[in-house]
Every structure is written in C-alpha cells, then in structure tokens.
Length: 353
Image 1 (tube, helix red, strand yellow):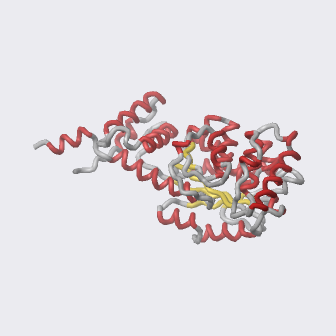
Image 2 (cartoon, one colour; image 1 turned 90 degrees about the horizontal axis):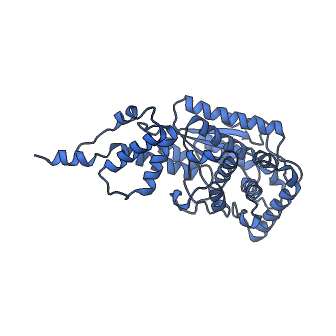
Image 3 (cartoon, one colour; image 1 turned 45 degrees about the horizontal axis):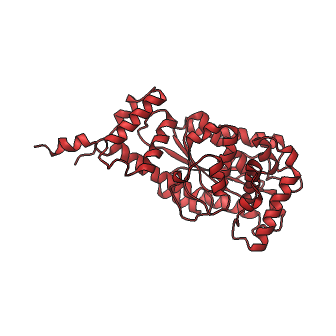
C-alpha cells in the first residue's frame, strides 16, 4: 500500500474563512481510511491546531520553553527544599541532565531555557529577568509594577521570536521552588475558591506543612485583597515571575496564531489567568496531562477546558513541562498520521485489477 502525502492540501487551504477551513478539515478527516469516530479526541486536537494556524500545515515544528524563577515565599516554613535548587536544576536542564532535557532530546524538540527571576547573579539560559526572585507575598507584593512589566514584555517578545524562527507549536514548562504555593494563591484569587480547594501537597509535603501552606495562601490573599482588582494585579501581588511569563506567552501565542501545549498545575493556572484577561486564548490551548495537584481540575474548569481535552492521566507532578513534551510527541504522531493516511478512495484504487 502506498503512502499518500497530503502536503498539497496545505497550500490549497491558504486564506480560507474559518467556516470554510473547518469544512475542509472535516472533509480531510472523514476521507481517511479510519473508522469514523474511532480517534475522536485526536481529531479534535488536529482540528484545533489547524484552526489556530488558520490553515492545514504540512507538519508540526515544535519548540519547548521552560521559565525558571525563584519565589520569596520560600521564607515560609512549609517549603521543604532550599531555594538554590531552582538555580542548580535549571543549570542541569540547560546541560542536558534533567527529565525534560531527555524528553526533548529523544523526541528532537528544541529546548529553550529562560531565566525570568532566578536568585543568582549570573543568568541561566536566556536572561529575561528584572530581578533575582520575588518577595514574600505574606509581607508585601511579590513584585513591583516595573518588574512585572519587564518580564511580561520579555516573554511576549520571546514568543514573537519563536514565530519568526519558524516554529508553529509551543509547549511550556516551569521551574521554581515554591511555585505551587504562588499558583494556588493566584488560583484562589481568580476563582474565589478557598485554599482547601487550590492548595496541594507540592513536593511531598507532610500533613503539618500542608496545613501551613494553606495558611500562607490565606494570609497572602487577605493582605492583598483590596489591591487585587484585575488578573494582572493578582499576578503581581501573589504570583511568581514564571506565572507572569507563562501568562504573557500564552496571550502572545494567541496574537501570533501559535497553538500551545500546557503542562500541569502551574501552567494551568497561567492559562486560567490568561483566560481571565482574554477568553479567546483557549482557542489556542491544548492541555497535556492531569496533574495530581489539588487545584488542577479547578484551573482547567475556570479556563473552560473540558475533562475530555486532557489526554494523559499519569499522576504526574514533576514540572519542567514533562507532560507537555510527551503530548507534543503524540500530537506530532497523530498530525503526521492524519495528513498521510491514504483515503478510502485510494484503497479501492489500489485493490482494483
């Protein structure tokens, strides 16, 4: 049986209206020699990719971005690891020794490491930081308006650079000790949910440290309640620089017509924040996995991401974008299949004498 390359479809579908493009996508999918409805979630993902691009591309050309930053909330007693791990592990990612490094290397996904606030005088990877980490949000706002704006603009420019370099799918990861705490605080502020529904165990917390963690979030929310009048204010008051960069990047992807893959809890909270700023951002978002963190379901629900859109259920909570990178490889596989499987018409042509 010969392999049919559908690359001519890409040029044929340039400059289509959304309705016309969707009709062409449906026609392509329905013509493949698969049982109708046998790959429903992957058909939806394929459609979402093409609608985000505004055409059917010849192939997926992905890049993976990890934003690393330190959080002042590590001063609080529930944090079980030294803040310096952020720096050392980001160096490890850059040098190829981390899980995400292996995932990207094996799957030939370019890896970009961006320092948006590591507490170290020398930057690791791309230097996008305004300062060396946030403040303790139980005492003062996490960052100044100037610091927030600096990281926001740098992240948006990074996405524009990826588009200019020819990448058409972005996947996101993050690294930063304490960032499940900042993410829970942001999610509670966005949704009004109590810390009991947004705070998870993070990196192996005990019952006692889990209790302290909820109290830390509760105190931060109370301190900044009056100042948090917008999603941007929420990020600035109780968030982290990784969350600022992720939120800005997702909105920049929307502007650049770049679909993107989110990872676990932290990136889901960033998506929820981006959704609160512009709901259209979810037209470009592809969830990868269901993190075991408590607030993951709430973050996805707030961003109107239905449970069936989450492909991987593996109780992951590693960070780095490990689940997102796995999802990218699955998307590459299914995209190649849908654009190369022969049609039903071709089957009959090949079997005729």
